[in-house]
Image (cartoon, rainbow, N blue to C red; front, side):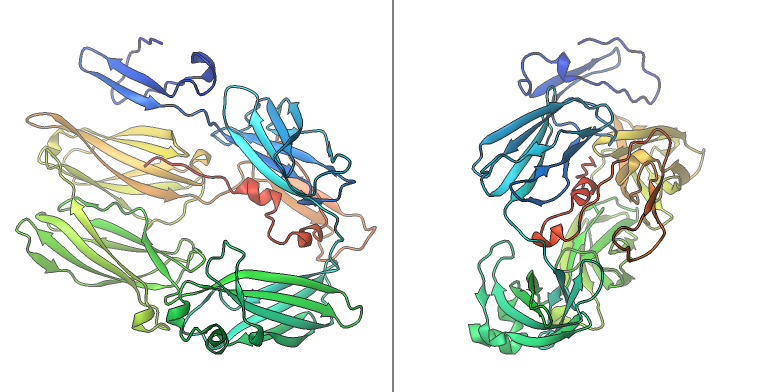
Length: 562
């Protein structure tokens, strides 16, 4: 393919290749060569191709079926911009032994594809079946969902286990409280029941193998839907020859509960696969912090704190100690700094002012939680090295809102500070915003004459959700050659439904009676398609670990180049 193009100053050019333009069958071409030729320069680049485009989510009405039922299924088909893909889609139903039982094709007119009900065949194979979705042509994108076929009876009531924490450390090693709750599916508590609590140890939470601790089993009474037990890890673990928290570090406590009604004698069960034993309840990692310095320009450090289940933790004090290294390898200690993690993203932010002659920065980040002794604080050490610029030119982006999550419609206000021997030759700042692997916005701002810094305001738009990277750069022409000088920041944007869908039940109540009429009011933008599903929540009690279908739809993987 050959294009003749007229390029304006500071351009961005978009070229799109469709699968139909490529020779051979799907996936037969792995790379294309892009060559740009002009009277000023010539350049070529080998670019890899991917035939994955968009997302396919399969939604079934239930996670488990009996042999005499049918599977209701629909597919959400979205392109890379999370808009309706409108591509013909193929569904394949596969039994537990891997045999393809049925294949169905349907056209997509709205991005929501309703398929005919899949009638479970007579004498089916029991176990977990697989549904695979793919596009009929051009793209290799696939989606997968699972459902189980078995004989079952809906549970009489639900049982939930609520540990006081998702980890066990030195503070609760001897006294760890566990709350058991039982509730009927029509939203009334189980008034009276016997509760049996069993404990074990696991090396790996992903494996079923565990060592039970029979002597640690406890029996208690559930009253008005609630029962509480206290577990002593120090005493119980001695049954398996473990003597301390250090020996149990990174292992998991397994908890299983059986609740038996005092009146009807019906029993239901629940379990927690693993509560982790940890020496420190926290882990530290850097986020949006490239380990490259720009001499003479402030260095931003962002530390994210998570708990043992990889959940973000706010309100945790974090300290930073740092040491600079100059060109003569001489070190200099900087004044320690302290920050507290934000409640929304678990991030503590620091800014370190660097001298012009710095070549490296050694720094340590450490939690400073007042309830933890020194040996149980989490800490990590890093080294950042100076970026080498041919023209000794740099740029720094400062974010005045301290890296807060943004909302669509707000304005991102940044301060751009350049440093260069050729600063008078800088005429423009250029910026790109990348989200989900694509450039979604770009622009050029004229540099203020004789200004050492400059404010730039950028509107946050829907196509940046859920996160984006802002790249700002300028071009300098020194004595020998031109150099592109850039800096970037990561932007978190709170996820909102693009059509701002609101759902209300009328009358508003926590409990509804059988036979009662309930109105469902939905408000959204015009020309929107809305799908509905109503499922007896007791079905999910049959398979406790199953993820709800709409949770799968919302768990969209995000790829952003930066």
